[in-house]
Image (cartoon, rainbow, N blue to C red):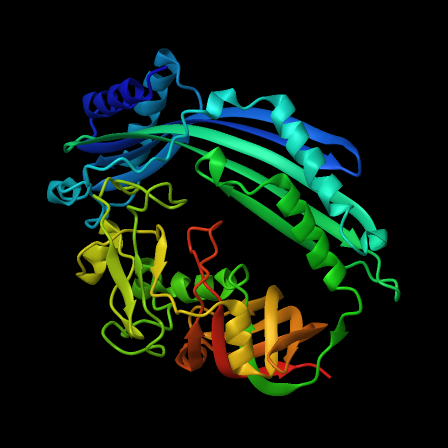
Length: 439
């Protein structure tokens, strides 16, 4: 089925049934995954999903509904019932389609989000990758401590179309490919530490060799053997690039206009103010070729454009959709982040540790919470003590706590190593004077 024609048909039906305006989005996706555990296939799954979402604007009222039945006769009944439902709801003067000028200026570039070789990937390829990951993991020094290895190979191809009755139409398609491993080892004290490694991207070529993933997952798990609770102290915290997304996510959640309007953000009223050190410098960039968060337009059809989020610690932008933008009197930017582009430092993680001397390298956050309204956080951490500028013994069962407005002002250094397997692309982050609770 042609998704664009389906969305056009649904939009026309909505107008014919009495809607003043409508936004229609249709999608189709195929996802295949193979899970391999300890020498044999554990699961193989293939799922194809499709659906249609309909936003209706009827006499000042708004309704959002969805369906997976895209047959013409079913779509007619669905739209008719949805319009009738919308008429029963309370009016909301802020609910309407984006102003058409926000659609204009869409970049004329190929973001390379759809691997043309997707159809060439076979079931045998997935199985071979999963097997190779396990074999590499079992070949590392110390592999005798391994209890279990679970590996996976997965891929997705998706298509979508979006039509607004006030002049917007867009289509897009994309692929992604992933391999990963989780390794469990036996500690002499009976504990069973786990670690993982993963790699992927829009194109199959973005994946690392399976052997590299297997080795890394096993080495990380074996390195956790003998982990102990570290001492309580105020020390520098070096956050591994892979783990740093947990902190950045807690900082970015309160940037949403909904949180600002509802007074649930510790960044409310901070636009134009310094909320971090000068090293906090990054922008939102939706136009990165093959980027995991790349797009030419967002979920509302707004033309995607790069914009600064933090400049030398100063908050420059919120994430503003059209609805909350009207409520707040703010010009829309976009509702959700795309790719984060950091102003990187010049040093690698080992060089940063050497400069710190003494501290904790955090490789993972475990549980805990972060309050988006107050900025207070308390997070469990695991990682390694850094002594003499080098990785020393593994530590765990520790906790860091504080407030984000204080923490980001202690950001002392940025690495040169953005994590490539996340749209956040976080580098290693170094914070001074962080309170660790342990023994």
